[in-house]
Structures are given as structure tokens and as C-alpha cells.
Amino acid sequence: MRTGLAGLLGGFCVGGLMLLSAMGAAAAETRAVIVLDATAQMNAHLGAKTKIDIARASITSALAKLGPGASVSLWTFGGNPQKKCADRADSLSGQSREATLPALTKALAKIEPKAGRAPAFSAVEEAVIAFGGDRPVSAVLIAGTGDDCAADVCAAARALHDAAPQAKLTVFGLGANEKAAAAYTCAAKAMGGTFTAIKAPADLDKALRQTLADAQAETAKAAPASESAPPEGAPAKPATTAVPSPLEADAAKTVAATPGEAAPSAPPPPPPAAPADNKPAPPAPAQPEPNVVLSATLAPGLPMLDAGVTWEIFKIVPTPTGQMREADAPLWVGGGGQAKAKLPDGRYKVQLTYGLATASAEFAVEGSRVERTVPLDAGTIAVEALRLPGGDPAVGAFFTLCRQGANGAREEIGRSSIAPAIFQVNSGSYILAATAGLSRLETPVRVEGGKVSVVSMALNVGTLAIRTLAAPTAQTALPAWHRLFADGANPAAKGGPPLVRLSGASPRIDLPAGTYRLETVYGAIRDVRTVSVAAGRTTAENIILDAGEAKIALPFGKQDGVCAVYEAGGERAAASPLVRAAGGEPHFILRAGRYDLECRAKNKPDAPRRAEIVIVAGEVKTTNLGE
Image 1 (cartoon, rainbow, N blue to C red):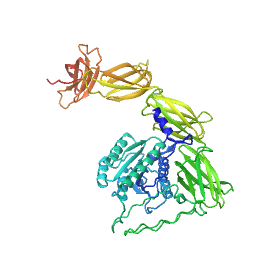
Image 2 (cartoon, rainbow, N blue to C red):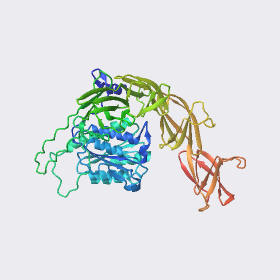
Image 3 (spheres, rainbow, N blue to C red):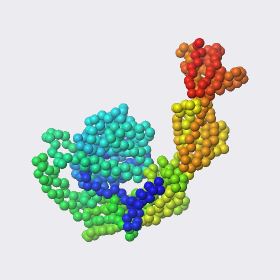
Image 4 (cartoon, rainbow, N blue to C red):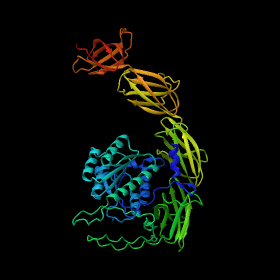
């Protein structure tokens, strides 16, 4: 694992400084359909931000890095409760394929999650069909909840794959439950894609960029030498956004102008497509020359960042009282290493984000070109979690980053389940926590501008693997219940809750090295023992219960009965039963041995039937009280 972290950091050395660089702009064509959840679930928080805000930022950042040949369609579902399961919409309806990135940014900003139904897959289906499945298309579903309209999401995905075999579905689940995750996983696999559970904003940023890059590569492989015009009468393509590259179309990123003010110049309309006779299209008109070029660096004197920065430029306007403040809405939004814009004269404030790091600066446009580099005063935290010092990685570790306030209070600012985890943050003091199973470790981290803080956290953790068997020769594990207590605790006493509860045939859990009390319950059998866990190792605990099962066939017809089991040969009048069961066919799980059985019909409690039952480990025996 140490090699993995060192290799990751070594790959980002620039001029002796280790930097973490995002994916650059690509030039090949990308065909993608993004379907975004607009239900009320997207108002829930994932870390410090709402799911909808995380989705907006990730989509904008990812699309800003695509080349000029990209065609992207944006669809939503769940934003109109009155439509119920027919609630799906093309957010760019009526706009041309050459709509700019700001047009998509505006569409994202207008999405307001509502308490509606979630026809997630029917939205994917309609979007893919409208886009055209005759060529490769990447369908990306970003969902905060499961589909509550489709009877069988997986079957619907298989049908869509048959209709559009070149469509690939990738699903990102933002806090989706297990049932939704299972359905989306099946649907994605049916269409050649994958499902990813998103646990932190950075996870979605990285995964979405990679998905669109893969789509770009797949389209490039499948692109024909030339494409003829569609036949007469063929349906028109859906509204899509041709996303400009950060270097070629920054002047086209205008979002909105302040009321009463001239908007920044927009690019001229695109040239018409080449006609069907394949005559060359006229050359594209020149883009307006930007008069503002902003760059970002982690710290003064360091190389400029080439990607991964989100920019927002606000106009500074006067208030009715004569004060100056920034406008409520940004005038320009973009992503990439630089912000290039054509702005009218005036004063502006730029806000930029790189990972979790933020910065702002003011500048003035006064008739001449403005070039400025904004230092983020930020560094990088690169963290790995190990089972023990110098050992293997702690698989499934989860990292939480908190800002340390002046008064000692903590504010959570980021989470990651990626190993190693990477956080770009402003310089300052932080608290980093790593969790794996029940093991948790915290450490303070000091970040300096332009530097990488490498953190290796040894959790001193081992794995307890439990397997419960009915008999020593049994091959199948039993679905028993388990409770784990601290060493010295008495599970039979009411001394507080257990450390953890487990169930299933063969549960596993990571624990801090040490000794514990393990309680196992299966039917009427209870086993309590001491287990020891060593750091960096897997402790296999096989629990042999010597258990068998007795099924009781009652002679009462359809009338339910109540049965009790006693120690063999004991006085029933004085002894309490070991266990009771009721129903038409009661059954008992007991340790191997002989027992006395007494059953009564519910309508004849004074006429018991008695028998002796024999329990054999690993076997199921039926006792017929009617014989």
C-alpha cells in the first residue's frame, strides 16, 4: 500500500513539487445523456453539501473539460409531482446542439427538487431513444433514490439494450439504499456499464470525469469516416449541448448579465452543418478575444494549475444605499486551469474552487486586457489507512476530514472512501479520521500552501471471521445472530449495549486488536466465548453448536397448537420449559440430546399430548403426535 501511495504522489511531480492534477480537456467527440434526479431526496445532505448542489458542481466541472465536438443532453425526473410516473423532462428542450456551457449551467440552476415520484429508468429510456441509439452513447444516471415506478428496472434495461445496443448505462447513487443499489447495479450491467455508490463529492467528480472520458474514447473508436445526412422525414435530434473546451470557448460562458447592464459579448452562431453532398463547411468565425485571463496557483511562485478549477465571476454593483457589493448571480461560470472571458468595463469579484480549497479576488476591467494569477494558499493531504504499521491496506476504510476551529470546534468539510484519499484544502489545521469496521483513528494534520502532507494511518486492526456450524462435519454455515462485547463484559447481564450486532452465515468485521466476548444465538441455543483479534491478521472463529432441528406434526387438524420443550425426565409441574412454539407446524432448534415435548390445542388446553424427541446434530427430524 505504501508503494501505491508513493506511486500516486510520484506521478504528479512538477518542478520538484508534488501536485495532484485533474484530467485535461479532450478533443475527441463525446455523445452523452445525463439523467439527473430532481426528487426531494436530492435536497438531503451528503457531507456538507446537498446532493443536488454536488451534482450541479460535478456536472459543470466535468463538461467544462470536454472538447468542442461534445454533444450532451440533460434530462431530469421527479421535478413535477403532478405528473407522477410520467414525470421526466428534457431540460434543454428547444435548444440547438451548439448551445454553450452556460446554457447547461442555467438549466442546472433552474432544477428545484420536489416531493415527486421517481421514474428514473423511464427517463433514461426516453432520453436514450430521443438521442438516437444507432451510434455509441453514454447514458449517465445520477440518482439519490430508487426507481419507484418501474416494475422491474433490470428487465427494462435489458429491453432498452436490445433496442439501443450501443447505449451504455452508468449509474451514480448518492446515498441510495441497498434495494435501489441492487436494482441499479443489475440495470447498469445489462447495458454494459457499472453502478457506483457515491459517498463524497470528490467521488462523483472523479467518477463522472472518467465516465465521460471513456465515452469519448468509445465514440472515437466507432466513428465512421463520414456521416451522411439523415433521410428526409427522419426525426430531429434532441436538444443537446455542445460543450466548448476551456481554451477555445471561454468567451461563450456567459451566464447572465446584471439588470440594466450590457451582457458580455457572446460568440456568433455556429456555421451550418455540411450538406449531404459532402461539400466542405465554411470556416468557423473567430471567437471574441477575451479581455480577462485568470489563472490559479496553489501558492505564490508555484506553477499554475492546468485543470480542476471551478470559476465564478460576479459583477460588483452599487446598492440603494451607495455601498458596493457583489451581484447575487454570477456573470460568468467556467471550469479548467484558466478563466478566459470577454467582460465589459467595471469591477468584478472572482471566486474559485479547487477540490475543497477556495479563494477569491477582486479586479477591474478599464479598457485594457486583464491578466492575473490568484493564489489559493492551498496544499494537499494524501492519506492511506493500513491494518498495522507497514502492513496491508485497511480495505473499506473511510476517511473524514474536519476543519479545526479557533475555539476547538470541528466542522466536517469532506469525506472519501477512495484509497489513497486525496484532499485539496486551504492551508491550516485539520483533523483527519480513518474508520474501518469498529476501528477508528484520528490524527491532526497541518497543511501549508503548495505542499503535500502525506499521512499514513495504522489502525492496528484485524479481522474476525465467524462461521457457525451445526456439527463438526457440516458444510453449510448457519444463519445465526451474534453480539460482540468488550472483554470482561457479561452478555447475560444488562450492562449496556453490545459493541456491534452481526447476522448471517459467515459475517466478517474489522476490529481493533484485542480480546472480546462473543455471544451467538441460534434457535434455543446460546454460545458465549472469548475471542482474540490480532492486528493485520484474520481470526477465523468456527462455532460448533451441536445443533439439530425438530419439526412437530400436530393431530389437531387446522387448529393451531402450543408446544413446550423440557429437559428429559424433569418434573414439568416445577420446571419451566426450555422453549415454547406455537402454530400449525411448530419446530425447535436445540442442542443434540433427548427432550420431553408437550403440546396442547388452543381450544383444548386441558388435553395435552406428550412425546419424547431426539435431536441429532446437523439433522432435521419430524415427530408426529398423531401416531
